[in-house]
Every structure is written in C-alpha cells, then in structure tokens.
Amino acid sequence: MTTNRVTESPYQSYVYAYPHKTAYRKLDDRPPLTKLWADEPKAALSLYFHIPFCEVRCGFCNLFTRIGAPDGLTAAYLDALERQAAAAREALGPGDRRFATAAFGGGTPTFLTAAELDRLCDLAEDMGADLHTIPLSVEASPATATADRLSVLADRGTTRLSLGVQSFDDTEARAAVRPQKRADVEAALGRIRDAAIPVLNIDLIYGIDGQTAATWLNSLDAALSWRPEELYLYPLYVRPLTGLDRRAQDAPDPAWDQQRLRLYKLGRDHLLAHGYVQHSMRMFRRADAPDQGADDYACQTDGMIGLGCGARSYTRDLHYSFDYAVNMTEIRGIVDAYVATEDFTHAEIGFEMDDDERRRRYLLQSLLQAEGLPAVGQREYFAPELERWVERGWLTDTDDHLKLTPEGLAHSDAIGPELFSPVVRHRMAEYERK
Image (tube, rainbow, N blue to C red; front, side):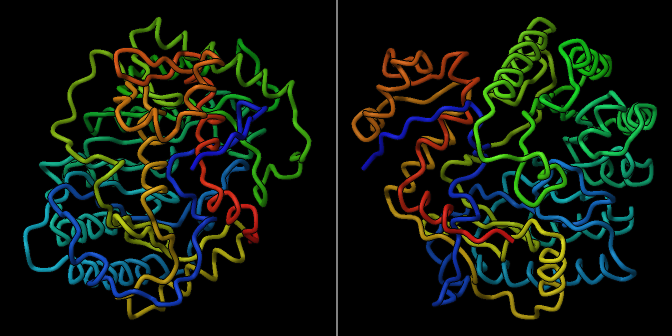
C-alpha cells in the first residue's frame, strides 16, 4: 500500500499535480468524453485554457510552450480551442453545470493580442463560466503585460494577474536565460496596478547562478515595494532538455541544495516579517489583501475541464490530456497536430485513477498546504510515511490534524515524491523524454 523510500535532496520534484504527465500513456480504447463525464459531479468545476506561446524560452522552463508563432497560428489555435470547447460542452451535457474558478495559463496567455484575449474570454463564457462572478487568474510576462491587453482582461473580470519576474537583478535574469531589464519589469508592474486588477502575484526564483543573500533580498524588496497581494518563491530546478540543462548533473549537489534552502528560509522569514502569511512552500499572501470572492472549488476532488494542447482534464476515474514534450521541435509538432484536429470527442492520452491513486492525490494536495488536513483515514493508510515525517520533525500529528512544520514546508519537494505510487514512479522512470 505504501513505500518506504527515503529521499536525500530537499529538491526532488515540484508536485503541483498528481500524477505527473510523464506517467500518462496512450489510451487504446479512446474513451468518449460523453461517457467519461456522464456521471461526474458538475456543481463546482474548474476551467483551464492553455496558451502554448512565449516570446522567449527561459533557461529553467520545462513547460509546454513554443517560442513565437508564425502568422496565423494563434488564430488557428483559437479556432481549435473553439472546436475542443464545443466537444467539452457536449460531453458535459445539457444539465446543470457550474464553473467555480477559471484560469488562463501557458506558455504566456498574454502573448495573444488584446483582440485574441477578448475572444478567449468569449470562449470561457460560452463554456458557461461567468467571468464576472468567479475567480479568473491569468499569467503574464513583463513584455506582454501591455495596457491594451490588461484593459481587456480587467474589463472581462480578471481577479488575479500573475507576473513572471523571477529576479529584479538584470545579471541574474541573464544567468537564468531570461533576457529582461528591471526598468521594463517595473514599467509592467505600473501598468498592472493602473489596470486595477484586484490581485497581483509576483513570481521570484532563488538558486540562480551568482545569486547571493543580498541580491535575493534586493529582489524581494523590489517586489514588496509594489505591495503585491501574493508572492510565489520558486527554487530553481535544472531540468532535462531546458536551456540550463548544460549544467545539469546526475550526482547530488549538496552545496546547491543548502544554498537554495538558505535562500528559501531567508525569503520566507523576510515575507513573514513584512505581513505576509505562508500558504504553502511557495505561496505567500499579504495578510490584509482583499478577499478574492467565493471559490468553492476543491482541487483534491472536484473536476477540471482543460482546453488547449497542454491542458489536462480531471474526472474521478481518469486524468487525460494530449501529448507532452519539452524539446522545441517536438512541441511545435504537437501544437501543429492540435491545430489540425477536428474531432476532440475522445480522450487520447491519460492515467486511470483507482482508489489508491485518489488517496495519494488527496493527501498530496492537502498536506502540502500550510493548513494541513484532518488525520481521519490518513494515519492508517499512510502510517509509514507519516511516522517517518514526524520523526524527522517535518510533521505534527495532534488533535486529529496533520500539518507540516516550518521545516516540513521547506522540504515539500521531498515529501511529495515520497507519496508517488510504485506504478507512477515506474511510468515516470520509463518515460522517454522528448
């Protein structure tokens, strides 16, 4: 039922979804979407649109995205999204359905023009998402956070704008293969504040070559000067087939691990001292930030409709998507194939969820949040893991509640992978990277 795997590095893997797409495989039976969604609860769904375009490919990025778009490709991609959305609506059926939250991710959704973003919002509304009454989060880059795009997003109901800054230090940005100037970043932040989108999130990265405690604090203070409602602090990972892959090595790097851990704790303590509340290893929210409104979507259990060639969809019994790649040539081929697709009525690639996998996913997506979860049903099923984390000082198990300690939150990227099932671990290991 459980495994007794002990990790070494605190930076094993960022577990933002489970199972990872490298555990997905071709579905020989190609189940119809109408069958997959027939008996699914539809009272609190999540809607996600994936836009696989960026103006540059950052050196650390292993997301499914391509650099630029030939003339006509973004329009053709939106046409394909419209066809896929129609198939998803048919699968959900004519009965009551409600989207509790929506997000545009990528890639960089704001790579699209203002008019194309307006059309994307139309597609979301056509799906049944009332963008003016539910949370809508959109990712952006400094170069694409232009006034006309931001105006469309604000007018259409965007409640959260996430800006990928990574570092306010130009030298560090170059080291991360992210060509940008601090002046351009500051200008973009000014435009975002002028657009009056309620929640600004700023992404920062620690562990960049040449980064010191002083430069890290400088970036944090530069971000804090904008009083963002949220900040995400990400450890740098060097992943296969990315621009920084040249410095990757199979052997552990304890010195780099300790550097990242020191910078994480420095950043965490700095944000806590400036009135932020920690919600997970990466996410910090300003204590006095305005409420974002009702969001009753539970990521552990509620379904998701993902539209776009890099999006996943979740039912209780199947997670499904399209093919996955990191290599640019492979990505271009997958995007082109998606754009050419006429029939989106079947699931092609995915992972079948059984009770064990659902339990693992629930614990992963609950325990890695700072508030933790009730212990009922967890102690018996995951006793070896929970006992081990208590012994390490990573977990408290009191008053029938499981909660990571500050040191446990710091080791979230080691805790998460320890809960991967043998099947998922095997599939990820045998996955042929492309």
